[in-house]
Length: 232
Image (cartoon, rainbow, N blue to C red; front, top):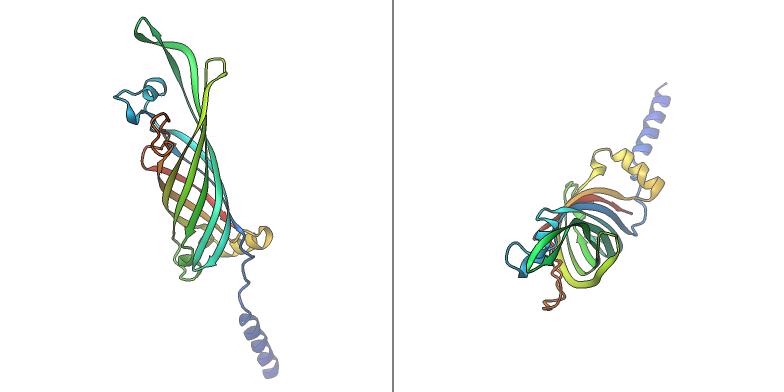
């Protein structure tokens, strides 16, 4: 009986000595987010500016998607990637009648597809190595906003693209801490190393680098975004 007990204890100690399962190889990340946005078109006009007169002064939701490739992963992660999104503002057009602006009964829409090339550093060693479940990150981006305006019939009446840049600071919370076992199984089955909830603030300047004949499509500073990021 003593020998049997000793054998069982040895077996248990061998099992407990096995190293923890390693996470799957790191490739990059995918994110989906949304946040309130309003382009700063009226920055060079007296109040109320043309954007406010047609579309109002409220912020509307902007959707964002991003895909990044990890260049380095150790004491933090350095990624380069592409992001894009969608924004639309609707309002009633204005027309000139004898020197007086009259509101039209037709709906006009401003459509934006903001796209960017990004470089992001995520200090995920706070969680991976120090077990602190808060991960700060920063991003710099070259921005290009494609835009078009449609009339009441949905026909494009004006279109263009405006370039610029942005910087972002954010904080992410790893959902893996809620259920580490489930997180490990998700990694094993899908290759997702860590799932984050994030929130960030962006300061952008999208006005063709100060060109006088360009629309200022910078977001009213700062622009906040909240979403889900999968590091895989």
